[in-house]
Image (cartoon, rainbow, N blue to C red; front, side):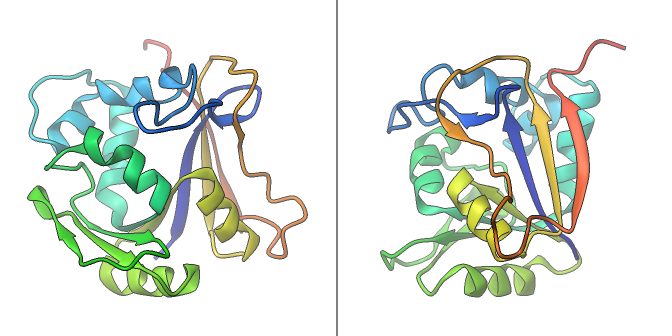
Length: 198
């Protein structure tokens, strides 16, 4: 089992634009950071939707979905994406949501269950590992959640997906510098999105 984190990032180092808020979950100008994923066949299939582009990016996202047995995310990421993800989120795995606000688990279509964890990042990770079976645990974000896991040395593999768009401001990508754990034990690489045609 590997604890992973995959993040889309601009070449100037931002994982979200300024002004993140309900109705603007990626922040100002950040739709380009995530837009490359939304029309991929692999993502659409996960939500029971037809069509989509079948290319290297779609294969990469399919590989991530297939390898992931559980997901951890912060409360803000959960809340900002709740409406967008709808009743049939693409995860199809247990999702552990870090929060200070206890609430009952939320079961969605397709096998996604959101469980709200109030006793810290290590507890959420332990629960995700127990739920993941033979799959990986992905620290989905947001950036502050990934920073916390990197800071504790709990991420085995970090992959940054560089999207060719400059944001100029926003939420900076986690660096791992100055963190007690020093970052992931392995950088799995960089990829550019959308991928150039083959």
